Length: 394
Image 1 (tube, helix red, strand yellow):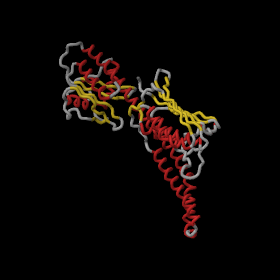
Image 2: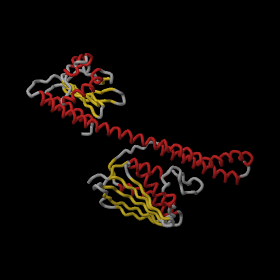
Image 3: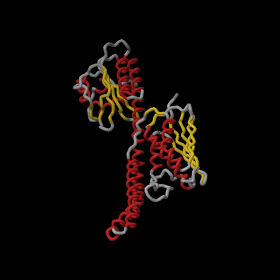
Image 4: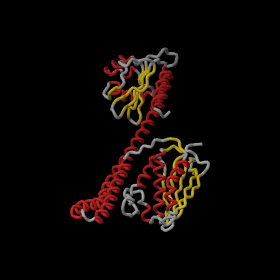
């Protein structure tokens, strides 16, 4: 079991069954709020007797670890006689109607404890019952610890992603300042010269065109920075990658035809389906396809798109989408930087000048889908991108 609710419920149920108790409560450590939270109940104990949470300073958890050490030496769970020597603890347990206390301790930390009511009968030998309860309690402790390790791993993963974004802020800030300087200079110059050149139609017409292009560029730059900075948690649905690829190729068909570029597609018929965010993956493929068209310019060429199934070690299925163009290619020294923010090999002026964030966003989306993106390129021959996405089992 990996879901905490069923796990704690099953634990207290089995402990009560083994101990012959009709009522039981399990409290689990809530590290964020520094308390023990009631996570499972068997029977009908009242909320006043067993509150929803107990502070770390409460007499029961506060002294349980010491009693656990004693129980460990005697190889049996802590019972009332062991911890009743502490007046505050004994009175608290008596008020709760608790007959047996089972601490769940791992790596020197009390991660949970189970409180069992009075047994219905004494049909079994106390020693055998105690041994069974100790074994069950340890098994539950291991399961709780595994769950907490998974939570820690998940938090670490989120923290790493946030840290990566924070590290990118310096690059983004510097890149934004550099990219926006030239457009702002032309706009400022136009505003300064316009009053004295207002009667010069050629100046007004030409400079207006330049300024408008620069405004478009600043607007697009801001939009792409917001796209990159926004946390992109994919909304996953079961999708056919071939359908998404075909949709994106249909979108660019007219543009490719106007440039004399031939589109070739080889889509595998038996492609497994993939859990993905359809709109985000469309953004990935449209970016790659449009980049390929730009790389070939007006010289014509071909864009080949292939899909296939990959079987990785361990038998796990992946879907691969290969995008190959016959454009200029990328210099070998630039390949390792193409996913860096604000790195671009496009140097056209005006509205369509590259911002260097397109492939960065592509890389981020693929990472969010737990996929991979790779690139191969040869100058003068073209570039090939490989997008790999984990597939659903058959």
